[in-house]
Amino acid sequence: MGKILIEGGQVLQGQITVPGAKNAATPILAASLLTTDAIELRRVPEISDVAKMLELLKGLGVKVEQQGEVVRIEATSVNLQKLDKQLVKSMRSSVLMFGPLLARCGEVELPEPGGCIIGNRPLNDHLQGLTQLGATVTLKHDSYHLTAKGLVGAEVLPLFSVTATENLIMAAVLAQGTTTIKLAAAEPHVQDLCHFLIKMGAKINGLGSHNLIIEGVKKLHGAKHEIIPDMVEVGTWAVLGAVGRGRIEIRPVLPEHLDLVLYKLREIGVDFDIKDNVMVVRASRQLKPFRLQALPYPGFPTDLQAPFSVLATQASGTSLIHDPMYEGRLNHIAELTKMGANALIADPHRVIINGPTPLYGREISSFDLRAGATLIIAGLIAEGETLINDVETIDRGYEKLDSRLLALGARVKRL
Image (cartoon, rainbow, N blue to C red; front, side, top):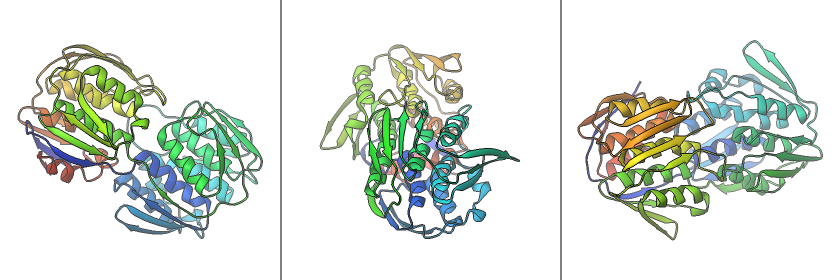
């Protein structure tokens, strides 16, 4: 497994360009299966999760061309027998194949998808919703086998699950009749998937709300689409700018996707401003303690509570971070305490952090994508050298991390 060596304490300043959102790119790539026409996508992030999704599409017989951030896809034919099940097991995003393949082929068989170790993430909401649309689900050895002679609109409740909402949207756009998705996830990347499908001819109402109404159509056509900037990257770089020793300019930024994140940054005392979709974050020395709870959008995103724990280590006082969504989201706290953080895990969902405390370089491990990015930030501001193991987890969602950090003045080396 890969490692990154960081020499902490450098002045970090310069510009960061934010790529397309990982959490928008993977469902949109899956949705390309819903038409035989050509699809062109721009601002596709060059990350390992996207690379794996493209390999899955190629394995199904889909024509894929990639030139940097531009990807062209043409799913003229789809061969389910060539689905790479080992690749499916290696990534959580492969669960997004359920909806489009069921709608396109009337059948799909997938093993339990892989991904980050952040806690139990059952597929009940996916399978129950697809069943309500007319699918039959059977467990076949270690795989889920779904069949449907024809999907029919229904009322479904994915209970704010992002990927379940996305699967149900992709299945419903070609279903007969009207589908109402209540308690739908409303995250910007879910909205981006809907915008893409609408360009393809889908009829979806209620974007941005927790109640989507979808009128099924007989056929979707090709489209061109530019993926939204990654809001999680923006938040991650903002934290780095706040606890660092310089000035970081982040672009492009869509403030309307970050209302509560920006509110929290101001509440904590982070020195930043936004103008013309450019966010400038300066080293902030008077950080205040805070309380934070991860919630479905427009609440605070679960993917950013981990980076905010580094802010808590540098704030003057006691902070409480609560993530009720996943019981494995606090794995990074033990690694931060090795580095000098004063943190107490109250239960699997809550951590209390007292600050400010200096951080010191140590050998630590990245347990999941967002924890890994958090530990990168900690290593960059720590005294001495930090060695982070298992950095492949970070490559899943952060594009060209090494070169972008080097451009800011960081001293990092991949081993």
